[in-house]
Length: 62
Image (cartoon, rainbow, N blue to C red):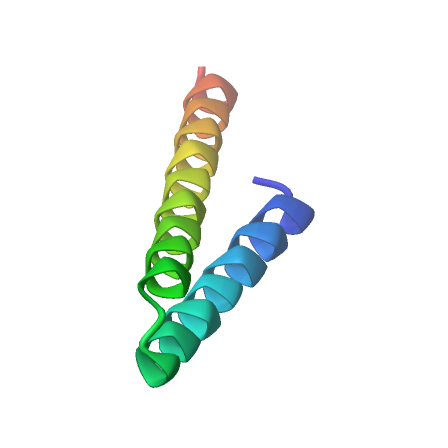
């Protein structure tokens, strides 16, 4: 996984956590939902890049 991709996923996760927390503080369910969605998207990006890393390692071993 490229460092840029991982950094983008971490950034999206942090943004999501912040947005969810703001939603909690203000009582805005839309902010909470959007923040949680960003976190889930970041997790999916990490998983996708982990798979790519594992495929690359497997190919390099062959």
